[in-house]
Image (cartoon, rainbow, N blue to C red; front, side, top):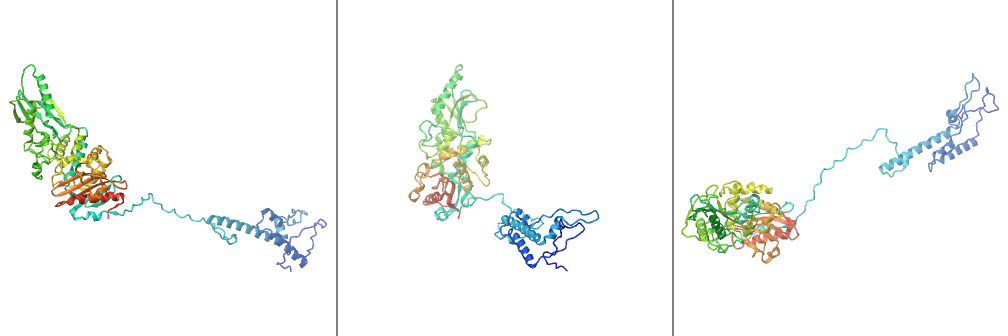
Length: 547
């Protein structure tokens, strides 16, 4: 029996040319030596492929070329041939070749797998890929927007805010460019503002009247022969002609000259002369001239007149002095000054109303609103503030009353993108304790003033400058002098408050808007304490922390 382990046991048999077709060659087994040599030769040929994995062409050396199968007779089965015959004849060589090819394929697969995953494992350790597809993991969620980094601020003015000289302190500081609130102490609480309110009045006037609007004083023909009517238009700068605190103020002398010339032309044929003057101060109710919350000392000390639509020189006893005692009869004083300017004796003077459609005889106008704001804010002129507020009410379609200001001024400020919820307006000057405006609201307005849009640059240009101009000219001294020239702000002062609000050009170049209130029994150290906390904000700039 043939040993199946013998490498030659299944070698296919092939007829030689000397054999007859019906004869089969006898099997000639190899000797052991020949078998070993044959095996060694086959192994040597196979190992040529293993170390370097030679090109596939070299593997063909292991595959002997078998002769084509031929038929030896019609009734004889053909001799085995083709690949089967070759495998049968050289089984060991085929086995080694198959292993080499398999090794080649496995090694190549491992190389590509290693490249794909970055593995450094040897090719011999590779595993055939699974026939099933590798599941693809879902994509990692990515945020649609990445939040900007938050600026870490380390500069604090909290200690300055607790100065007892600031009494009940309220305040807000903003980055005027970005609108970010940097510091706040009860800034949302509506409180009295003192004269800081004049900035709100100015903004409302610019929104409703416009920067070029002029307050007008007219004279028209009266309803009776020989009568003329002097009609007040809310201009406190109208001058009697003996000098004025208001530069380039209109004068009664100019108005009287126009009236006499027009009257002469109108009556050149009938010779009717002027015999009476009627004073019309009904642009708003003449009796609505003093708020009950104001102290009468404001009038006698020269800070505030009675608010009538017809007056001259702001009703001052001394027209050349900013603060001068005010008259108890501003309308009558205006009539007397006009009669004097006419130079006509024997005229009667009364109060009344101009007839509708009356013939005009003369008109003089104030400086434009932009100029009036420039005359009001630096010195905190209460008279201009109240008159601008009343005229704003009339032009806005209201009756010019003090009560109408509660609607008119907040509504006008909406045009600047402000939301005046919680804002209470009692007057136009800030003298009343009944005004209520959050410091945060004022700071927002000041941020827009700093931007200068919608004619608000007019307010900015008129604000007093720390240590330089207006009501701030003597402030920011000592250690606070570092902020001189860098603070543009409106001051406020009544018996129960000092206030300061405006724009700070900080030391780091940041533009800040702010409003500070010191509420209570003010003392001589309250103003310097406001300057100190303002200077601290100047030094912090955009590094100001709310801690």
